Length: 215
Image (cartoon, rainbow, N blue to C red; front, side, top):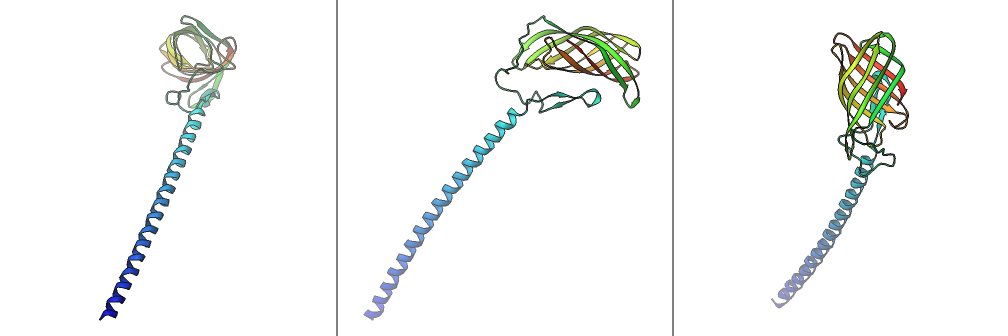
C-alpha cells in the first residue's frame, strides 16, 4: 500500500513538472510572437508612410499636349497640394495683366477632324487674387479668329499654379460663344511663350483650337 502511494506521488510530481515546463514554453512563444507582430506592424506602418509621402510629392504634374489630347500629367491639383513655396514660384500682384498673343494656330471641328484650318487670337488675363496654391484670374479681353470669323472675348475666369506655368479656366465671347481654356507656358507666364488649347463653341459648331504665341 505504501509502495503504491509513493509511486502515485512520484507520478504526480512528474506531471506537475511537465505542466510547469509546458506553461513556461507557451509563455515564451506567446511573447516572441507578440514582439514579431509589433515589429511587423511598425515596419508596415513606416513603409506605408514613406510610400504615401513619396506618392504625394510625385503628384506635382503639369499640363502636356496640344489640341484634343491636352491633359494633366499628374494627380488632381485640388487633391494633391504641395507643401511650402516652390523654387520656381512667381510673384504676381493683384491687378497685373498677362496677355497671350498668337498668330500661329489651327482648329479642328469636333467630330470631324478632316475639317480644319488656321486660327489666331489674343487673350488677356488679370490677376484678381493670390492664394497659397496659386492665383485667381479673370479673362478681361482679347479675341479669337476661327474659320475666318472673329469672336470678341466678353468675360471669363481662370486659375494659375504657384510656379506660373499653367492656366485653366472658362469664358464667353460675342455671338453666343463659350470656351474652356488650358494654357501651358514654356517657362512661366511672365515673359515667355505659351501653348493654348481651347474647346470653343459658337452655339452651332464646336471647335478644338490650338494656339502658340508669345506672352
